[in-house]
Length: 258
Image (cartoon, rainbow, N blue to C red; front, side, top):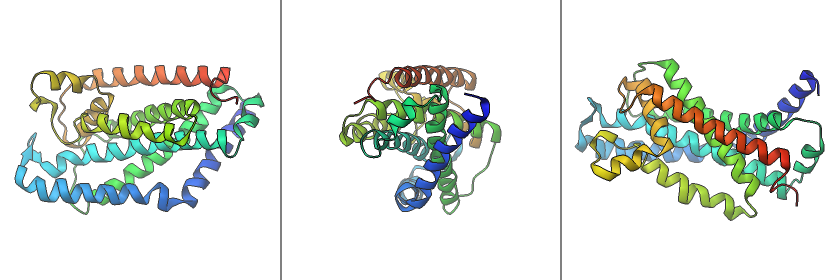
């Protein structure tokens, strides 16, 4: 394929996904905003007023980056996993895509771009909701953008791999419940890793969401539990592994050809 033809394939996949998520916005965006508002109200306004400050900032300011990141990764994963699953079992258009001359990396880019757009859009909307509860400062806008992109790309790739392998809708729903939710709650969304004793601190260190939340929070408050360079290295390595996995799955058709 020529670069122009590759662009047409990529833009078609992305445009179709964007149109879909905007058409059903009460399902794609509204639930995240309501959930985030409840978290800000309960954990930030009510519980936070009793906790006081963490890392020298009010507790509600401390948890905002984690809650934004939580919604971003959930939406990036969910979007790609369901789009791939729908393409396999309902629309059956994945067969047409596989027999086309479109390279696997273009297909991956198209599917992942949809997840990234949904994750980042949701993150921005949640940040707007957060402003209704507390003022926010930005210590480093570049770091905020970098970690948000890394988060959405990584979990969009994870959603793509899960969507390829899932043979039923339960195979899609089980990951947010039994994998993503524990990772989120053990990833430093509601606490600083410095406060964890013994083995719990070590468990947090193997949680990829910890590195995402830690870097994203640094962009707002300018404080970090671990080196940003190390966090970026870990996340880039994870993204490379997931991309290689997705590339192999699409190139071989493993789990796609029924």
